[in-house]
Image (tube, rainbow, N blue to C red; front, side, top):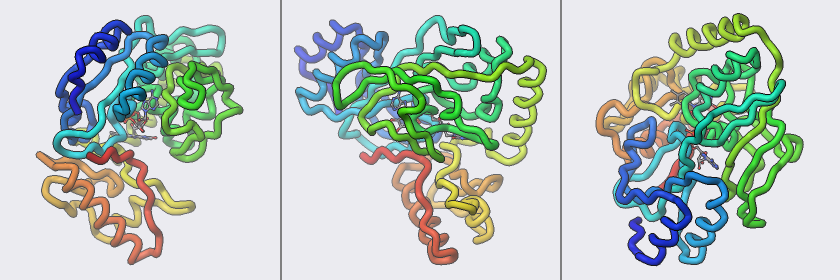
Length: 302
Ligand SMILES: Cc1cc2nc3c(=O)[nH]c(=O)nc-3n(C[C@H](O)[C@H](O)[C@H](O)COP(=O)(O)OP(=O)(O)OC[C@H]3O[C@@H](n4cnc5c(N)ncnc54)[C@H](O)[C@@H]3O)c2cc1C
């Protein structure tokens, strides 16, 4: 979708929001898949209510893009635009055991910045690509921990009240790769409350998690992490592996040889290829185990 209305473009510029026309989302996603559209880059949280009002008044559909590491985006010209927060300077602001972090900040860098100030707890999240905003929305987690456990409050744009609000951690439900944020709310910043730990202890924890990832995940290949959520008490990857599906492919979309719940773009995979691989694997698992796997990857259809 292209924004061409001059009046709208002038109003967007007036809000200090940058308009980038015709970007390819294949360059903004870790899977390297996705068609073209326009992107609006927001530099100040204060411009968000005005910007989203402009888009809603003109019925322009939009989606919030973080780091693009959990997304499967459709092919071709896309019928919606993307809105993204620009990365702020300075990054993490620390105060005692609290870390105030902008939603556009890099998750991994936040973990290491906090470690340098003897704040730990999030070691498992090292190696999870993407932004703080995406991690909050998805309740990113690994190796027995999840970001939601450390959230004291979240600053967000509420689509219901059309204002910027602060929610306390206990007003939000964080479940396995699911949160209670309404779909049209935009995460802007978070305050994390982190346990004190020595830098050495945190770095040791980070090393262990890095080794586990390197040993089990196709880190050099284009993926969006796990495609399916693990059903209660079971492992989606194990079921796919037991069916002999490692290496199974549709076009260049392929089930990783290393981790059966990671599907990789082994060349020039299209969204159509990847969607058809996902549907096929889901069907086979359902036929064999009677379990219908639910997506962990977020699909933005064309
Ligand atoms: C190699 C690899 C390993 C991974 N390992 C893990 C893992 O161990 N654990 C895990 O949980 N995930 C893992 N992931 C998936 C992914 O990294 C996480 O889900 C990550 O938190 C997504 O963040 P993002 O900024 O890239 O979000 P995006 O992919 O850009 O977006 C994901 C969703 O969040 C929404 N969103 C993003 N930013 C905002 C915002 N500011 N406001 C509102 N909504 C927003 C988007 O609209 C979309 O619905 C892995 C991915 C890869 C490629």
